[in-house]
Image (tube, rainbow, N blue to C red; front, side, top):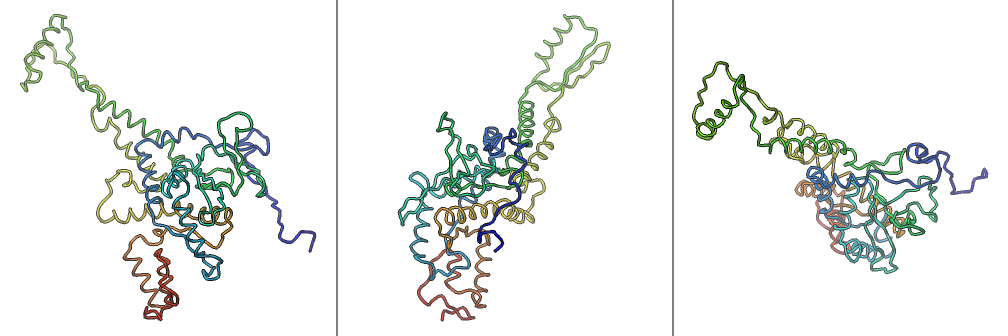
Length: 401
């Protein structure tokens, strides 16, 4: 040995050096606060942003999922594998007294997409049949210690409660909080939500839409007649004649005067004045920020039967799959691994590998015939229990041995 204890390594680089100038006031060790949370929440309630958020959140929350033995481990060699798998499934189905799996993680996914700060508190129960409890936490209230050195005994997070005194911040260990960061970066301890990326664009769209709404609902006519060198009496008589004889009758008005009346056009009233193309451009930019095709936000000009299915698949692969895998990895690593210490198990969404059920069935059948997979392995991929002892082995024709 060269003076370094076996199994112990020390980091030489500085964690988040930019926080001393970009986020802090120069004091090392201070906790960092996620900015603009109130405005992000407000924009998340607007129709366009809500459509984009729900297109991702609802899809993931409705996915079928399973808990299985991790790759590299053999279920028969894992102690109490069957009992632990059952306990994990039950605890995830009923994470606390008031939530189901869907209602809990819908809240987390909302925060992930809005601000990149999904958070879940994880507490052990000591009950082997229900080993943990989970609670969704407002990610905007979570403060991150930018100088945390990896010591599991020191708090990494803190929740700002809004109280004063010793209860102002609740310290949380790394193993007590699942903190899901979307788009993690080296210069900040926080993630970057998709609504944050679209923040300015959503603001511009709301302004353009508000202007167009007022313009469309304005009942002022678009044209007026300018009569030069008329006396007040003549002006009043013309108004009465127009209202009594012309307005609303469909008659052709006939005017006779020394000078031709000048027509004045007021601004507004046409589609160009409503800036509809500008609003469509903004919708496309919002869709880009959420990694969705524009058709998901109602832009259908370039949509047809030939590319509709392709765009739907693109939306799934680019917008849904990365967030779903991020959440699954955090459940596997933070909940199963760090909190419980059960690193032999993993959480997976069944719908991520193949969207078309017939395509998935065809692939699994061919792998089964080729002897690459066994019957029990295929059943496990589909979230089903093994058929029975010894039935999992198959010959190249797919018939159980």
